[in-house]
Image 1: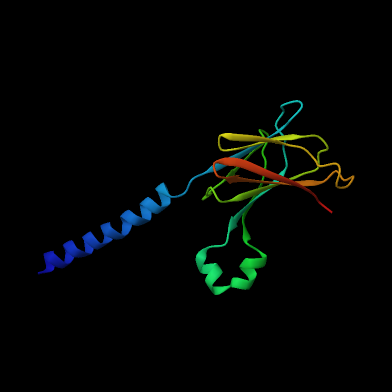
Image 2: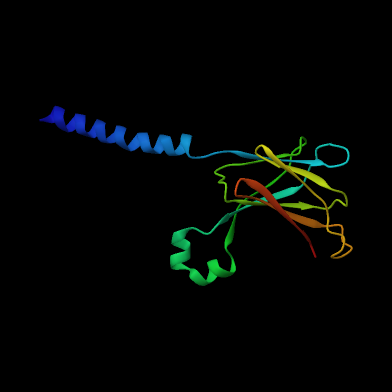
Amino acid sequence: MREVIDSLQLCGLRIAVIPVLSLLLGCSSVIQVRVTDATSGNPVEGLRIERYCPASRIEKIFNPVATTYHPLTLAESTITDTNGIASFSRSTSEDVYRVYASVTGGLDIAVSKQCVQVSPNTSKSPTSNWVYSVWMENGAIKHLAEPVK
């Protein structure tokens, strides 16, 4: 009888460890965002990039008012390194990346294997601080530029 109990405990441990390992190894994908200067092609160092994720179904059920007015939640924030790269863990295709830049020229922003060129919308206001929102929609990369006050 003792052998059966020991084998069940070991089997239970194996069953518990396998989903945890698959969750840790298989479900977390690392996304790299690379930012370069559009005119020179040089990497831009020291830009703050934030990853926002959409509200989950559970959040929408238990907090419908907040998720209506704030559908995105800040998940991660980092700064580009000397190569202009910022890495994010546990990213999904629905995440929105916001790049805070104080440059007057255009930037090339590459998320995974897709690249988009963004530049300040000078018709809005004469400011040098901009935030660029970049996200994936129907397999294409979309972006929006807004001045930072």
